[in-house]
Length: 356
Image 1 (tube, rainbow, N blue to C red):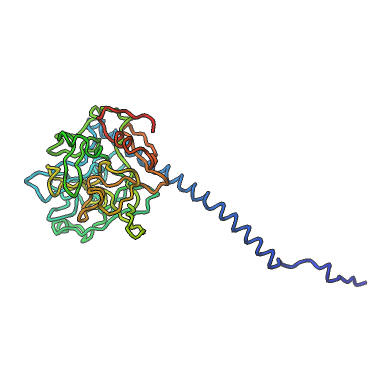
Image 2 (cartoon, rainbow, N blue to C red):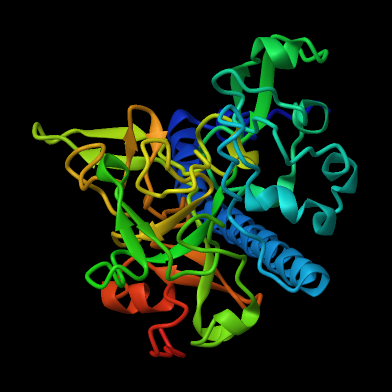
C-alpha cells in the first residue's frame, strides 16, 4: 500500500529568507559585541609587552651602572678637532645588556658619524645597518620602525651600501623639567628654535654644562620617585585652523642615525647644532596636541631636526608608559596634573611624589 504525504506534512528543505536575515542579524550583533572585546584584549597584551620592553631597558640601565658606576649618558660631546663626527646615543651603550653584544662590539665611538650626515664616516655601519632590537619598539605604535638614509662617500668606501636602514626607537630618555633653573643659569639654557636644553633629568649629555655622567647618587629625589625614560610612540596630532588634524612623526629618534645617534654633539647646548636626539625634556603634557607643528618651539622639528623637548605620547588609550629610575614601569594618564609630571622628571627638586 502506497502512503501519500500531503503538502502540509513536508519537511522544510531550507531556511526561508526571513529566517536567514534573522540569523545574519544575530551574527552581526554578536560580532559587534565581540570585536571590541577582542581589540581590547589585544591592546592589553601589547601594552603589557611595551611595559616589559621598558623593564628590560631599565634592567640594562642598572647593569650599565653596575659596570661603569654611571647612568648611560645621552651622548658625549664631539671633539672640536673632529667636527664631522656625531656621537652615539645612550641606547647604543646599553646594547650589551639587551643581548646585543655582537652589534656593540662593532661600535666605534671616537671619530665616527653615528648620524650618517655631513662629511663624516660611520665606522659602525656594519653592526647597525638593518639591526632591529625589538625591545626598543612599542608593539602598539603605528609609526615606522626604520628609516632609510643615504650613506656618505667615506662610509661607502668602507664597504657600506648606498642606502643604510636604521632603526627608530619608541622610547626616549628624559633630560628633565622644562626651564628648571633657567633663571639662575644652573640647569637650563635656551637654544632658539630647538627650545630649552634642560639638565634636571637623568639621561643627560656630557658637554660644557655637564662635565661627567650622572650616578644613581645624583638622583637626589630617589630612584623610585624619578622618571628616566618615556614613550614617544605615536603621531603628534596638530589641530589645524579649519578643524582638520595633521599627523607628524616627531619622535626624538626620527632623524639621521635613528636610535643610534645622540644628536648634534656640540659641547655648547646653545650652538646651532646642539639639537638632542633620543632624549627630551618635558615641556607639555602627555599626548599634547598643538595648533602648529613646532608650537611651542622645541616640541616639534625645526628644519627637520628634532626639538629638545619633543612630546611624550603613545598609542595606548588615555596615556603613556614611563620607566622610573629604579627600573619599575608605570602607565601615566594623559590627564595627570602637569606640575606633577614636571616634578616626576626632575631628579633634584626636593619633591617626592609617590602616588599619581
